[in-house]
Image (cartoon, rainbow, N blue to C red; front, top):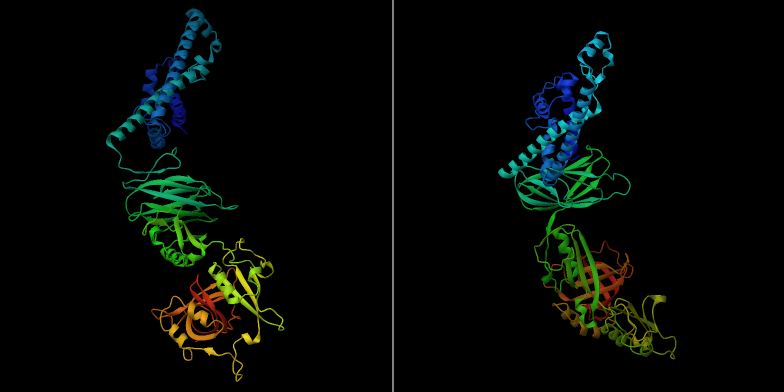
Length: 589
């Protein structure tokens, strides 16, 4: 309802008041001037409720709406002033036309009026009923144009005084300044400011209303410290600017359909001036949640060489909840040490980040991770046939393949060709055994080298026992030396003792699911105990193994668990920098 709607509503009361105030014959009321109408309205006291209308003092006849008129006028003053002037000019033109019509009607009436004698005769003869009903005293019905005249006069008078009073109040407030502060919806500039009270700093409030599909899809009305802010559409997100004193305040949200369905929480502006809240509309209440502030644990310049698992753990500890990992296949075989380290980090799309930067806990964090790019086979499949399986394995490892296995088959007869009989890249029936050097593969694809061996090519014993000799720190000086100090490169040991069975005490340094499997694992070991510092020996690894493959009969396998490892040495992995082992037995110790 704009200022004119409010003024016209007030005129309805003015008309009623004026009808009560005139209290005279029709002729006398019709002859009242504009000044007399104004004086009558100004001095009238309603007999029904006993309270003065106080039009002359500039108050709206409906006093309960003065504050609403003042607020409306303060925000629409410039545009309304011109509209009020135009309205008054139009009303004045209509009054002038009515005055002219009344003067003409009076002239016509006097011209047609009979002489005093005739009038007296008719009166004495009982013909008083021939007179127009509008001339009867006692408040009979007046003509429509006379009623319009009085209503328009009242409208001009009240509207003019009301607008002058509103403008005076606005100018007075501007002169003396206001000690109150306001909440304004920045996304809805047409909405009027809502007074909060007090002075303070600007506080930014972002509110995200989560969308429901079918039920409880009502809009919510927002309040801060019981001051109305705005109505937020269901499922929408908006931001608002608030001026508040430092300290605790209350945010309240209620259903626009049912004010009893509401919810509230308090927030503290003594530390932060930016807040984000989540609203969830339920059947019986409105749930509000403040999204906490968190600080970035590292910056863009701190990520060189940082493992993705370490970065993710640091972010979780800091309070971030939305962490996404994106792989970048940008590495070449010679850059194997950078696999699974961070290439970049961004928060809400921003890449320039410093340690300690402040964000909301649900900010979108993207970790981009170095991964090995597609690799090429070192030679074609046909050229590898008949060669030594270990040499072929080393070539594939150097080319960037990370999962190379050898499968031996005993020759059926002396006529069988020894050496590599087939090389397959991929899984079982879907593998490629006819590849060339121009083909590309994911470096994690399994390379299976099938080779034919004779019984004489296997390690021999003296026949006094059927079990292979197990090398330990007690019977193998090289293994003892290897496990006595920290070692980064054990390629020499792995080459010298390939195919030998070793046994040592150690612990699980790390265990992860192999690919998407839930029951197959990649297990990394270190010698000694978990609290040994620095660690001794190189890393050892079981790749793509199950509990059955390890013949493990213990409990849950977790990082840090002390175990005894018995396994066959299967070579050195240059990319991962570990000794590959084929499991024989894994035991708790």
